[in-house]
Length: 284
Image (cartoon, rainbow, N blue to C red; front, side, top):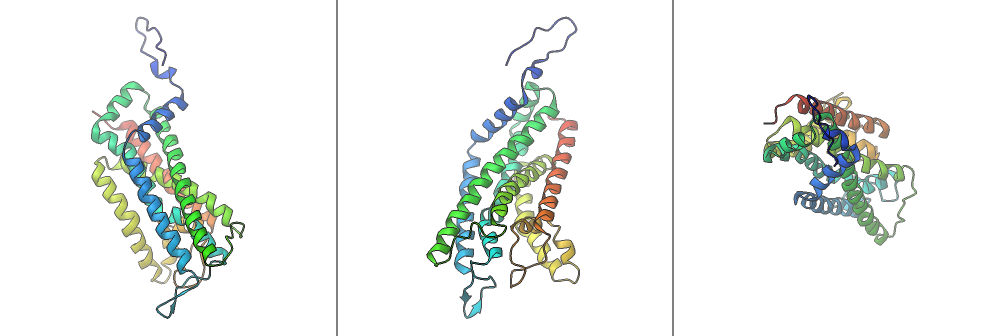
């Protein structure tokens, strides 16, 4: 970083010499130099393996004399759900990755040094948003690829075609990667709203894995409640996969583009709220 000479009455302008792409690179370096990212990625891969193999093995079969509730894996809707397993089962891990983006900095007080190094907070916030979008997309690519490979192997062993060219499958795979990136931004917003790192992680995981699914299930049991439930984050994520519209596990979902817009809306709200708080909050 170049340092400009400062004349009488002139404020330092070192932050102007730092281009945005370099700030994004610094934020990505922060992620890579912590031990948490690979732990989250490992757990996410394990979840993607479990969910994709379970879905591929269960589809079209009877369990205990009862149908599984999923059509055979030559159905395009089942294939879309199967190949989105890495996203549907692993988004909580990219959510936690985002939570740690600022909650960890507040916990260890490194955020103070960050803002002192680059006094213009909007640039830091923008760099973090871009860095965690990239990191979330990278995580998503690994998780989705894991689900595609594992699920594909199982359905091949069962004698079915891969079906990667089935209607909507390529789109679902791409949108699943994007969905992981958006969930990372949701987590970043949560990490700003709840500065206590442990509390932020616990709250986000409980809401994503327990409260949201239970609320969705309860609403879908009430007449007219499904119209509300499909706007919840978990249901918006499921809509991206365009799963089966009939059977035991089928619920009323938005179209894929509606689910994507709703999920992006949650990301934008969290990003906006987090940005406003970061610009106004005292970090000392």
